[in-house]
Structure formats: C-alpha cells, structure tokens
Image (cartoon, rainbow, N blue to C red; front, side, top):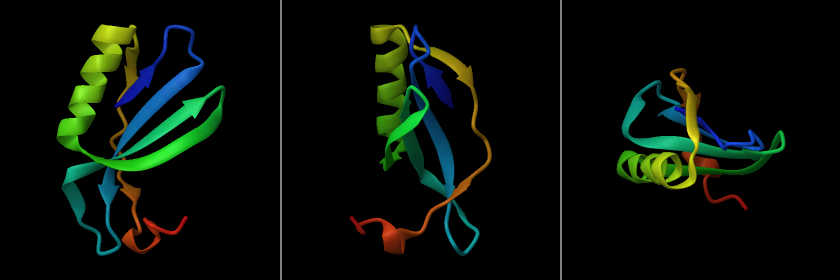
Length: 83
C-alpha cells in the first residue's frame, strides 16, 4: 500500500517482505517513510500495526491511498540490528 499526505510531501509505503530463502512473510511488512523525496526511515512492522497506522493516517490525518505495492522486497534479517 502507498499513502500520501494532502500536500504530497510525505509518502508512506508498505511492502510485502521476502526472505533470502524466497518465502514471503505472512505477518510482517516493510514500512518506508519518505519526506520531500528523501527516505526518512525503514522498519519492519506486523500487519496488524500496519492496518492501525493506515486507518490512523487515512481517517485521522487525511492521507490518501495512491497505490498498492505488491512486489515483495528482500529482507536480510542479519542486517536488521546493524546500526
């Protein structure tokens, strides 16, 4: 799913996640927040949290659904805590 703020300056993308072995997660999604064309954050969240956030942004802050991201993104769990 792809959400955009009223002004279009903030975009939030949610992608399905694919692991290195080729399996697609049924519980987690990759969330990418972009502001003015620059990536601000990337994180893994569960689908229940994604639905709550989508509802909050659409109904509470006036975001619009502008697309659906269906291509799974490769997730390397070994790099998850490499900060």
